[in-house]
Length: 226
Image (cartoon, rainbow, N blue to C red):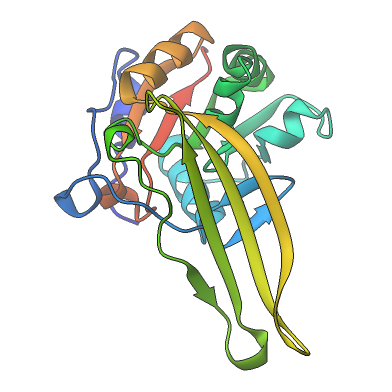
């Protein structure tokens, strides 16, 4: 994995990542997702990248990691070493006005010095453009091919958007809808993330750019107080 900025997460409680999008040094980019679980979209390889980031910060050894959605549903015992958040969960919680409460619970569920690692799309600069969809993503080969499509419906002020994720698979008579999930999300910028993580009690907040982690979205890493 590329440099993750782990030293800043370990040793600088006031650290905060830079604002804006850093993929390839260019401007904001839309990414298609490849899977849907309980209404949540996940980028391919996210779990592996999250594990590498956790190991870079916490050091070698076995670290117990859980998904934030499972923690909020009460499906896992606590405390844990790492809480992970998929690509659209935090914007969705923000739209439901439950983001601070969810992150506070995550912080209190971590071991001292444990980590929250969250992938968060930075779409604050896309609002005025009102994009309707990223390109479809195709996975698999032949009859096993699957197509994942995102459809976006923006609020007039660009502060939120509706997201419909549709997965298509090949059936006997052509393409069929395998799953379809509709959710609503609030746009979260870098300043929003820094503020809400601090309010939830996290320290050593750090934004890791895609070029540093290999993940297509910025990753926010924050530690529970020791």
